Image (cartoon, rainbow, N blue to C red; front, side, top):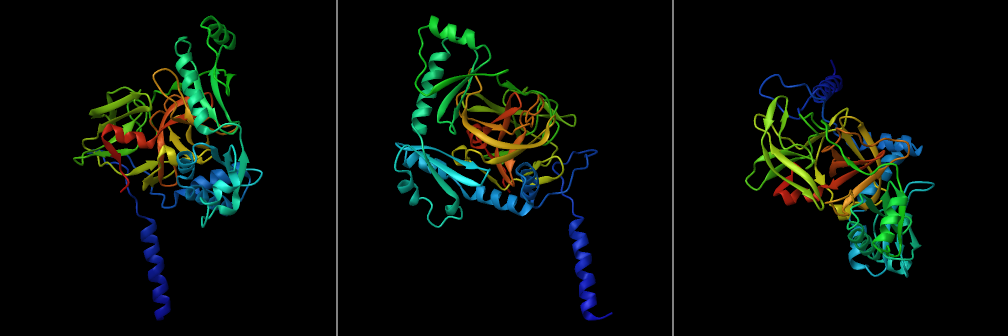
Amino acid sequence: MSYSRRVYVLVVVLAIITASTVTAVAQSPEGATPVPTIDENPLVRDAQVYAADQGIDLDEAVRRLKLQGALGGLGAELATKERDTFAGLWIQHSPEFRIVVQFTRDGEETIRQYIENVPFADIVEVRTASVTLAELEAAQAAALLAIRELEIPVNSGINVFENRVEVYVTDRARFYAALREANIQLPDHVVVVTVDELSTPETDIYAGLALSQCTSGFSVKNSSGTKGITTAGHCDNSLSYEGTNLPFQGSLLGGSYDVQWHTAPGFTVRNLMYDGTNNRYVYSTKHRDDQELNEFVCKYGKITGFTCGYIIDKSFDPGPDYIATFIRIHRDGVNLSEGGDSGGPWFSGNTAYGIHTHGIGDDAAYMAVNYISDLGVTVLTE
């Protein structure tokens, strides 16, 4: 056999060996359940769904999702430094892929300094809005403060696309009657939207792993190095996996929080998440401030499985005891949430975005991943 032929055969053999490597999510002391292989390029799987949804080819879908990731914290930076004029930022997916930035005035001049030498500079579109994002946030807070005196359940969000605050109710007549009786007038730029149902906590099982109730979320560790897993805070504190008890360590429920964590004795806690076909590593997290409107994100849940959608609201209020920091996801014609999905991971590629907490009809809501740190733990990224 010639030298070149021997080299070719050796390369093929090594490739086969490499492709056959399997890494487990967690190992049980007895009878561990087989798990799928690691997906080394999970962004492609996300892009396959995105490409089908947008009617584009896979290469273009991957390009767009990479540009989405390159945005970083531009929206948060503008919200801080240009508070007096900034009215929101989002990604437009059709008819053309664009980064849309809104200001109340001087938008073209303002944005110029922020997009020098960035890969998405040529697709930034500046628009003019009536009120700033800060004004909308203040109006939402004032409206919710007044409404909660009525003891009528509502949800609320900021519709940045329409430059307004929305209050969601199921009984419009009852709501307006209560406002009149209490002599309450909603602030400017607040509109009431009638919906079929309000958000409800999802309280069943499974996502990354099947727990006795609800879903396993991202893996974490505390300052002493003890590792465990998270799930939604509204789930039962007594949880088990494959018949093994997962000792409860702490929870935060209310305000910006809906999260708890448990240690996992007898298992190997890994920085992995399941997407319905493969496991993928968690290499990074993305703060709520750095998540942008219309980002395309995905999740895995026990009932609805692997589904993806677009961020339509970063200021969703799921109801009493919570505040408007939850992130709402929508995708036309797709049910993103059912009972049993709670606690499941929301992600893009290898980046953790949040923990699934609520369903709003077919829409979903999650708690941003950065709030996990207030439990005294950090998300495993290695």
